[in-house]
Length: 435
Image 1 (spheres, rainbow, N blue to C red):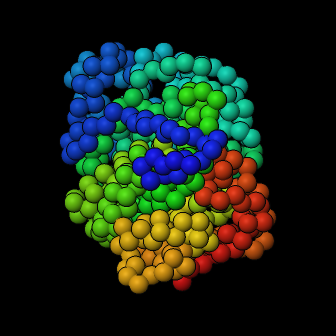
Image 2: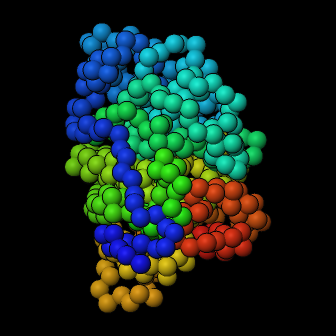
């Protein structure tokens, strides 16, 4: 047994880790540079993906003006579905295929950016819809070759979609979330302009902010990369490779930033320092989990979102049930970390401390309770639902929730220990309420 930067190297395990990231431009006003970036990439005709609400707001107008100044022809697609579905992905792909674009720009949250990823994939390499979808729901087919340039411009501070090769959607037939994952889906460039988040309602700030927190917590506590079997060839190393020295750096900084700024950003829409801090935290956490992967809170969230019956949240589209992604993740998180902290108490205590918890005098056996209690306290202060019971679930739903989670093989296998459906049922029962 050897060691690599603090990670034990195990016989038969992987001894190397990969570091991939989109090229990132960060800072107030950076959105005005999207036209220059598109021109530098040689783009002449682009599809600008957004949603119907954002299409009327300043960030999209700024992007259109910038592209126009650079002489780039722009066609807007504003029919992105918040929390995309298989059907909305397919409609977007049809638009992309018919438009014959040489590049793409996405201006919006994770739903917009993920929809753009899927659309450009199917427009470039047409296939049956489930060809590229993660196993076991889809074939998990590899993306055949390079994809057109994609410049992603987030308007929320949470998903990190601008830095990842993952596109998530609701499978309406199976009533579960799943996705497409490939390094080739990672946007070419990310333009992160904190001023573009000014239009976010308070509830969206909270939901997206907890997505940042859980990305960092899950990546930091995922199974170590060195415990994965060595890939038969370098190109087969999974994108979600487990916790590693590269992802650890982003997770630690993201947790500190979220601990300092999340509740401030929720409380005061005019707190520019807090919004900027959360935008940087989202970017760092996105780069981190784009290389390490997340685990059980996100795996469980896919079932929570997919089986939603009636819950709605202020600030989100009305007219259909919806558990926002960040909420569907964080309602599970305290239960998971309380149960799994024993796999690495020191790491869970460090995560709690970086989020702002007082860990003085805490023993290893206290790690789960310290982290879970601090996280649920942040949830309460931000006004997000108190566990699964407040988004419409009870004991009668536990079987379906566990069944909808166990099929998320990419995420479940990234947990720090093996878990089966019975174990998942216990985690769901522990997530009903926290205060």
